[in-house]
Length: 173
Image (cartoon, rainbow, N blue to C red; front, side):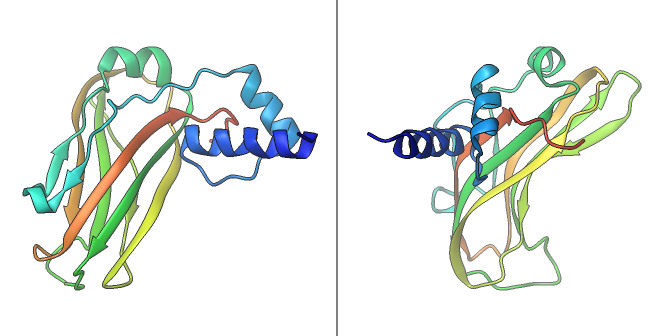
């Protein structure tokens, strides 16, 4: 196996683990390897599936202690996979699919984190991701951590592969 084949496989592995579509240079992969501590803060196997009657789903695994110990002051990548069909745009609803976390810090300030997707077609699928900086402030509570289908009630929506990981590249704040 050539060096190119090995590094391509390594980069593919990082894309899968972190839920990103980034292109990784050799320097990026060296950085990622030096601090390799991939931990998804959500429990595995969770999904939101409207065929099972779910329009909202509480996501499990994230804790206040985990947030304060591992996430404060870090760049976090949030991602999931979305499939939908039967979407019809409306002025009465949010026209979005995704997940959101609301926290309250020790000074009673609220913050919201997570990715949202706004469909532009009747059906489709996508890998959704967003990267956000988590301030250094300690939190006292997680008000909610939930996935949502906020498109028309007749649409079929499935959201899987929820990930919340510390981004090893530490992109801009």
